[in-house]
Image 1 (cartoon, one colour):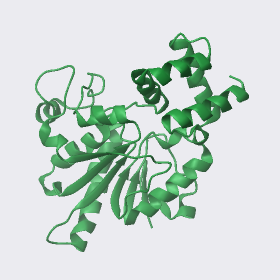
Image 2 (cartoon, rainbow, N blue to C red; image 1 turned 60 degrees about the vertical axis):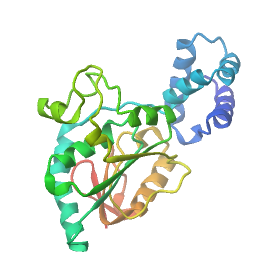
Image 3 (tube, rainbow, N blue to C red; image 1 turned 90 degrees about the horizontal axis):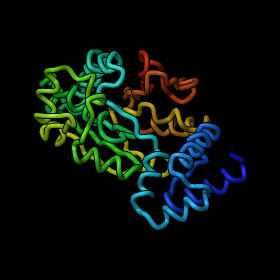
Image 4 (cartoon, rainbow, N blue to C red; image 1 turned 180 degrees about the vertical axis):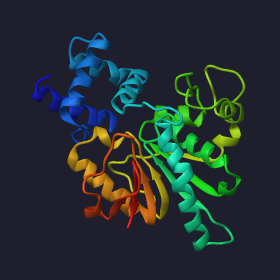
Length: 266
């Protein structure tokens, strides 16, 4: 794809979807766009944009594709085990020190996609009765992904493959595939539309979970987001990132490494 064509596409996408592709890595996004045009049988981007301007369902499919909704329950299980065994006990200990009568964790799942991440949080916390006091806010820019999350599914066998037999029994509705999250878990999560690149961040958070989202952005945008995550955390709060993600020079923005995939505000 030529740069001039890409510039025109970015202008159209901003107008139709309110999505600024300047924040995404150019080469990666251009490959995705080339693949999408071929997949949908359009000869030119002008032809395709005429199509989606008249077809809301196709516009929604295009948005879903650009915002890259890939997720699963307990993705990278060893990291979630670290969260359960090390990070959560630390955060609840600090919550008890602040409020012995009602220790509560405020948690944000940022870029939650179709919902497995915040539901994983709810399942993990439900496993330990002492951790039932928590607020989980889950946000994403993609309305289609949020709708699926709020509907509690459906989820494929592949998306729930990291759940144990006991977890499937306790936290999913009977039957499947496809699978749906049980209401007792779904009611622990509040979903909300949110644009990481333009909307205000929630504040005074104990834990932010943003995994495999920031990796798609440019270096400059990554730096801005990591600083905004830092500001959104209370002192001692934790940022939980993807297994292959590293916050560059964390000390320069007020974070320190606290195990693989975890960064603490200092």
